[in-house]
Length: 249
Image (cartoon, rainbow, N blue to C red; front, side, top):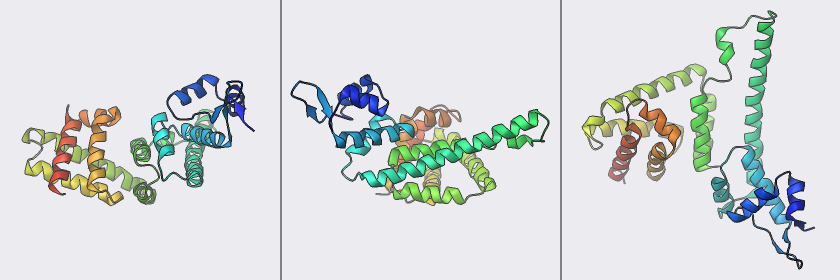
C-alpha cells in the first residue's frame, strides 16, 4: 500500500522534516503524487529508507549513503549481509564496554581486584579502529577492506603496539625530512616505505594511494594527527605521495 509522508514517518520512527530533507537532497524521493496532491511512498522507497536507517545506525554520513545507494553495482542483499556483520562488530564492542563496567563496579565494591590495564581494555587500539572506520567509509565493501580487516584481526596486542610505534617512528622521520622537499630521494624513499606498509594490509593501486594522501589533508582528524608531529606535515605527505605516484605510473 502507498504511504503518505506523515504515515511513513510514523511507521519508520523518523520525523516528517527528515523525510522532506531526504527528498530535498535526492536521497529518498516519493514515488509520486496522489490525485489529491499528497506525496506517496511505495514498497521500493520503504526498502530504501530501511537501508538509509541501517547506514545511519553505523554512522555513515548522508552524502556517503547517497553515493552508495546510487552506485550501479549496489546490491540490497549484499548490503544487508554487510549491515549484519558490522552491527555484530558494534555489538561486540558494546559487550566489551559492559564487561569493563561490571569489573570496575566490582573493584570499587572491593569484590574483585582489577589490574590497572584492565580499566582500559576496550579503549586501547582506538586509533586503529578510527582508521579502519575511515577506510570503510572511503572504500566501502571492497576486497581491500576485507583483506585489511582479516590481517588486523590476526594480529596480537603486542604486534599492534609495535605497528603503532613503528608508525610513530616513521612519521617523526618524515617530519624531520620536510625541509628537503617532496622530491628529495630520502623523502621519496620514506614514501616508498609507507606505500609498502599499506600494501602489507591490502592491494593498494596507485590511484587509491593517491586518494589516501588527499584524505590526510581533507579529513581534519588525519590532518591533526600528522600536523602534531610538525605543522604542514599532512600537506607535505599528500604532495610527496603525488610525486611518488607520478613516478610509478
